[in-house]
Image (cartoon, rainbow, N blue to C red; front, side, top):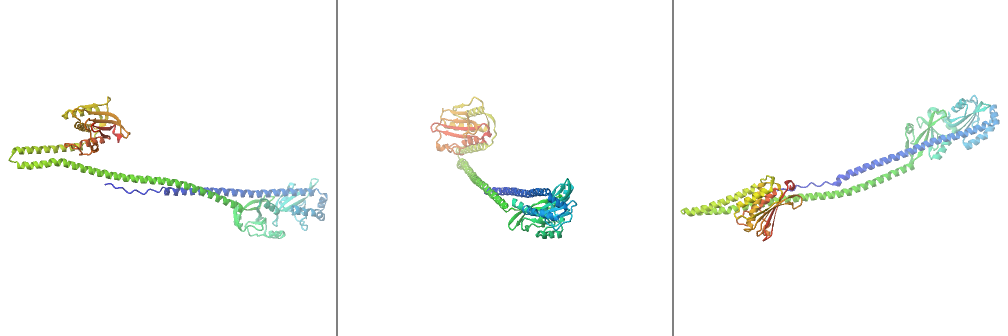
Length: 588
């Protein structure tokens, strides 16, 4: 007996797919967030770089603007005859009287901090800003450029005391001959203050220590009333700054990174500060230091964080939405898959039950067949035993003994005939199909039937005009047709004809084309309750019947992939129809 193997539990579709989908969405979201972060960081850095470049450019523009103002002042002074005479005569008192009020006005309104009168030999004649100091040689780049080019020269100059000054030097001529030089200058502190107000950034001026000496730098701090830390940076020192003090995190290590070309973002008391450097060059083109641009980017950082959080939140919502859509879609797929699995399991169980029922039916049929065989053999054998016992008692009566032995012989012959029919039934399973012309097969079977049938029933054969060739076993088909003719002869009246027809027909379920071979009689017909049992082996309504004729016919037709049907109307005869396919593959 076949048993149902327990079905493997169906795989969870959601569990199989939702994890990888969630992982893929998380990966995509992370990549997207990182891309947005990099874009935002790039925008931020570009903005800071542009702001730093703007600070450097604005510094250069203010230097140029103040240099033009200085040039105009010096041009006005060189056109003053009284001032020229005092300069030529070396009259310091006259120079003081004439330039003192002018210098104070320039100091107050334009932040001019230096005004020199220097002779043709570069020896200082008079310092308006420091009258007590004179007679020293002026050895500065702007002075040498003005002398060498015989034209006005300007630029940043780093003084020995650590002052960074914008200076303008112009030769003083009379009749095309230079007789001295005028020099005017200003400290750059007010310039960085103006840039701070314009760009909202803090600035600091760092100078390379190789251009200064510590003791002179300390002396300059005292003169300018400033404070400073020479040891804070390894290579630079701060000369001026717009804030009270530089951020604590801005140390020598960070300065080294900035000098290497990197930007820096530092945290100073809860503020986020971006630090960048703009190179400073003096009038001679030397790189003397750095202009430090410090910008508070707390607001920019907050906007940046809000943007990242917004993008991340939107990404999470989108990912959750996509994941929910996949979840519900997979849930439907899983339910469908579960239903299919349950259906397959039910079909498997039904199939197993079907096989079990078929097996039981086969065993039942086998038991019925064995019972029929036993019944068919037992009756004659009982008679044989009884007649043998009578023959033993009638040994003195030879005539009676001969009669009894004759009965025993006939009973043995009946048993032998029954065994032969059983053997013929078993040989039906030997199947050998080949292309067979149906007309000769039917005509030969009818001829054999007429020779074997004593009453010589008329047979009406109705065949198509065109040849019909089918893939059949001619011996089995002839045997089945002969059985049907015998049944029809037993059911029909003495003179009613038996009709044989061969017609093209479609399979009852409409899937294949074939031919129907039918045998009809005009007998009394078969009752409905009997018609349902005619194909059961050993079922018969005649005392001399075996109940194997019609089961043999059915078995032959099934071997050919066909169908057999029986229709009967009481009082109007019976029709047996054998449907055979054009070829066996069509009905496989």
